[in-house]
Structure formats: structure tokens, C-alpha cells
Image (tube, rainbow, N blue to C red; front, top):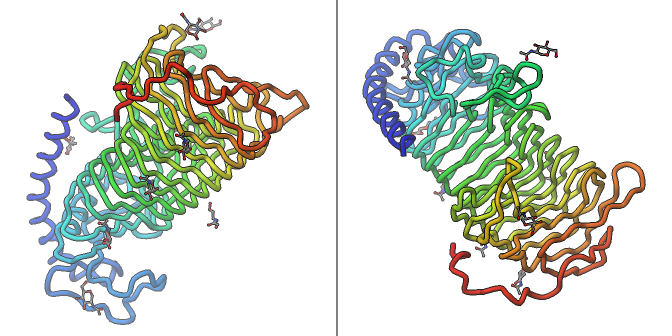
Amino acid sequence: MSSFVLLSFAIWLSFVSCLLSSSQARWHHHTKQKHSHRHRHSYISHPPSLSPSPSDSPDDGYYINDTNIFDVRAFGAIGDGIVDDTEAFKMAWDTACQSEDDSVVMLVPYGFSFMIQSTIFTGPCHGYLMLRVDGTLMTPDGPDAWPKNASRRQWLVFYRIDGMSLEGGGVIDGRGQKWWDLPCKPHKGPNGTTLPGPCDSPIAIRFFMSSNLTVHGLKITNSPQFHFRFDGCKTVHIDSIHIKSPGLSPNTDGIHIENTNGVQIYNSVINNGDDCVSIGSGSYDLDIRNITCGPSHGISIGSLGVRNSRACVTNITVRDSVIKDSDNGVRIKTWQGGYGAVRGITFSNIHMDNVRNPIIIDQFYCLTKDCTNQTSAVSVSDIQYTNIKGTYDIRSPPMHFACSDSVPCTNLTLSEIELLPAQGDIVLDPFCWNAYGDLQTLTIPPVSCLQEGLPSSVNFNNDNEYC
Ligand SMILES: *[C@@H]1O[C@H](CO)[C@@H](O)[C@H](O)[C@H]1NC(C)=O
Ligand SMILES: *[C@@H]1O[C@H](CO)[C@@H](O)[C@H](O)[C@H]1NC(C)=O
Ligand SMILES: *[C@@H]1O[C@H](CO)[C@@H](O)[C@H](O)[C@H]1NC(C)=O
Ligand SMILES: *[C@@H]1O[C@H](CO)[C@@H](O)[C@H](O)[C@H]1NC(C)=O
Ligand SMILES: *[C@@H]1O[C@H](CO)[C@@H](O)[C@H](O)[C@H]1NC(C)=O
Ligand SMILES: *[C@@H]1O[C@H](CO)[C@@H](O)[C@H](O)[C@H]1NC(C)=O
Ligand SMILES: *[C@@H]1O[C@H](CO)[C@@H](O)[C@H](O)[C@H]1NC(C)=O
Ligand SMILES: *[C@@H]1O[C@H](CO)[C@@H](O)[C@H](O)[C@H]1NC(C)=O
């Protein structure tokens, strides 16, 4: 609740700053016209509209009509990587967002590096807004440079926007190293200890309560924490992005999704230090295709049901993808004591390369060693694993289905599974506990621990599974 209060305050603040900045933007507009030939892209749509002469057309040709392009430099951004360009970005956003055009571009031009602070870009906007990043966008450099009054939990936030794309050939750099090295991060304290928190670090890009979003083509690197988080969103298309952080950077999930539906993640590469894609409660209708993860902690549904909460995740497909050098492959993890269901999940055509736990369901997820056994659980059913081949790290068995004592996993379907040890010839047996399902083909290694049919105790009208 307190974050809601903070957020309301932030919305109010940005509303006030909208009022301020729209008048400033007009002022900029008039002063800027004189300089528009120095900044080729610096046209603003307010009348009198400038018709670009042919010599003004950009040579890279991604647009032909630039009357609706708002170049951040036209609002005073410098882009030398040192100056704080936050105010110019806010003004450019507010002007583009309020423009009467049906479609506007806020341009972060090629060849410049813009340092900006934690900012909430708020909608709704009048038309469709493209934030085109061709240059570099970067955070202040680490916790000491982070303004004391700015949120330490998020950097760029897009809030209440219907119809936006974030795209371009540029780089979004979270400069995470100094955050990863904080003494409250795992083993970063004196002599390899971990000092107590709070240890908040910013999520690089967060979309909140928004819809019809596209993220395309960018490189996002070294986030202090998650690279992307979508919560409360609808209709999200992510294509051809590259997320890159070191394998040992803590908590740097690639794309985190929660309370969000209708998500496509296609043709992307994610190298990071935590989950490649993590899917939280309230997510449904997700399609993930042709992504390469690794190093990473794999693709995770969960963790769900923490502190006896209800969690529902349904209709998720992950296919035609590669997971390499990762702690997990495809994982479902739930805490004991939760409610709700994970249902209708398909993992197909996935190549594993040196993956620990390529296929894993863990209904005993616990971060400490002393979670007590509880009788309720988020139920797991209708999970299909098809054509999953490759190699596993022999420290763990290639298949691991650890299901709740009271709520067994049901209808797990395996076909065309071939997982071989990445090194040596020690073959580990799959592990099952309270797992029910079918083998549609023979598997390598053979699975003999899956129980056929349905458990006699399953109550199909179980209110606990209500979603
Ligand atoms: C540029 O776009 C505006 C609206 O977006 C349109 O009214 C105008 O005709 C366009 N100009 C050219 C030269 O295409
Ligand atoms: C933080 O403080 C600075 C300087 O006092 C101010 O310019 C900025 O707007 C503040 N930022 C927020 C998010 O309140
Ligand atoms: C999303 O935005 C595009 C571009 O403006 C528009 O054509 C499309 O209809 C929108 N889709 C939805 C579901 O609103
Ligand atoms: C770190 O370990 C060294 C050697 O064991 C010891 O002398 C030193 O006091 C330790 N430092 C801290 C802060 O614990
Ligand atoms: C898969 O994604 C990669 C980028 O990671 C791209 O180069 C390749 O063309 C995509 N394959 C297909 C079939 O779209
Ligand atoms: C599952 O999600 C896909 C989109 O990924 C959607 O097309 C399909 O209709 C959904 N299926 C059901 C049963 O809702
Ligand atoms: C919890 O349940 C698991 C599985 O039945 C069992 O192996 C473990 O010993 C139990 N732990 C406690 C503390 O009762
Ligand atoms: C088992 O799960 C599959 C999807 O993985 C689904 O199509 C099928 O209907 C389920 N079977 C039963 C008996 O629920």
C-alpha cells in the first residue's frame, strides 16, 4: 500500500511537471527554430510546421516525414554521457505525449550518450508513441551517484500508456557493476560475507498498467536488477532484443512478467545472472519463441504462492529456443502453503546445452533451509514437454519433478526427450515425487518414476485451485 501512496504522489508530481514543461516546451520550440539546421532531427510539430527540405532528410531513411519527431536535443539534452539530461527527456516526453498527432516519435539520436535519472514517463498519450533509441541511454553511475530522493527500485518507468513502442539500434546501459558489488549482495561483504539489507537496486525498464506495447531491436545491458519488468500490462510484443549482463550479476532477470497477459517474446538473446524470463502470478497467454538464454537461470514460472498467496499462471508456450550454460532449463517453482494453479504450459523444441536441471518442477521452493511443510500448494497440471534435447550438467538429474505431498502434479506429458550428460558418461535417473503423467515416447534417460493416471485423492472441485 505504501508504494501505492508513493506512486500516487509521483503521478501528482509528474502531472505538475507536465503543466510546467508544456509551457517550457513551447518556449523551447520558438527559440529552437533558429537552430533547427544545426540539429537535423529537431523538428517539433506545433505550428508553423516545418516542411523538411530534401537536404534535411535523414540519410538512414527510417522516416520520411519528420514533423512529428521530437528529438531530445531540441529540448536541451546534451548527450555527452556526463550532463544530467533528465529534464530534457521529461519535456520531450510530455510534448510528444500531448501532441495532437496520431503517431509521434521521441528520438534519442545516434552518436550521443544521455545520462538520465530515475524517471516515470506517464501516459495516457494522445496518439501512438515511439521512443526511438538510436544512441545510448545510461543511468547515473552506481548507488553513490543515484540522487538521494530518487527511487532505488526502478529507473525508467512507463506508466498508463496505451500504444507505445520502445525501439531502435541503440543501447540502454544500466551500469550495474557498483550495485552488484554492494556489501549487501551475496558474498560481496567483507571476507565474502553478505551484509544485511535493505539492498534495493533499480529495475532498468518497467512498464506498469500499460497496453499495446512493442519493444524491438535494442540492446539492454548491465541492469542493476531486473532488465525488464511488465506488471499490470496487456498485449506486449518483444522482438529482436539483446539483453546482456555477466553470468554472476545478482538478480538480473532478463524479462519479468506479472499480472500481464498477451505477451509475445520472439527472436531475442538473453545472457544474464538470473532467470532469462520469469513469469509471475496473474500471467496468461504468453508465447515465447526463438530465444537464446545463457548463461542464465533459465525460463521460470514462479516462484508462486509465497506467504500463502494465491497465484494463477495459465496458457504459456515456450518453443523453438536454446538454453545453454544455465542453472535451470524450464522450471516451475512454487512455495509450500500457496493456492491457485499453474495450468496449460507447453515447452517444445528446446535445445539444452550444459544445463543443470533442464526440466524441473519444484513445489518445495524455499530460500532458507527451514520452510515448514504445509498442506496447501499451488497446483500444477497439464504441462507438456515435447522435443527437449541436448546435454545436462551432471550435478543434478536431467528431470526433476518434486510435487507437493497434498496436491500432486497431474497430467505431465513427456515426448521426445533426449538429455545426455554434458561431460563423462554418468547417467542420472530422473527424480519424481508425487508426479502423475504420461510418456508419449521413450525418453533418454528413461523415466520410470512418473505415476500413471490420476491420484485417488485429487479433489477436482478444490476451491484451493480456483483462479
Ligand atoms: C506529415 O505528417 C502529417 C501528420 O502526421 C501529415 O499531415 C502531413 O501531410 C505529412 N507530410 C508529408 C510531406 O507527408
Ligand atoms: C530530487 O531533488 C532534485 C534537487 O533538489 C530535484 O531537482 C529533483 O526534481 C528531485 N527529484 C525527485 C524525483 O523528487
Ligand atoms: C496497437 O497500436 C497500433 C498502432 O497504433 C494500432 O494499429 C493497433 O490497433 C493497436 N492495437 C490495440 C490492440 O490496441
Ligand atoms: C577477514 O579475514 C582475515 C583473515 O582471516 C581477518 O584477519 C580479518 O579480520 C577479516 N576481516 C573482517 C572484516 O572480518
Ligand atoms: C531467431 O532469432 C535470431 C536472433 O536471436 C535471428 O537471427 C533468427 O533469424 C531468428 N530465427 C528465425 C527463424 O526467425
Ligand atoms: C493461449 O494463448 C495464445 C496466445 O499466446 C492465444 O492465441 C490462445 O487463444 C490462448 N488459448 C486459450 C485457450 O486461451
Ligand atoms: C516435508 O515433506 C518432505 C516430503 O514429504 C519430507 O521429505 C520432509 O522430511 C518433510 N519435512 C519436515 C520438516 O517434516
Ligand atoms: C493434459 O494436458 C494437455 C496439455 O498439456 C491437455 O491438452 C489435455 O487435455 C490434458 N488432459 C487432461 C485429461 O486433462
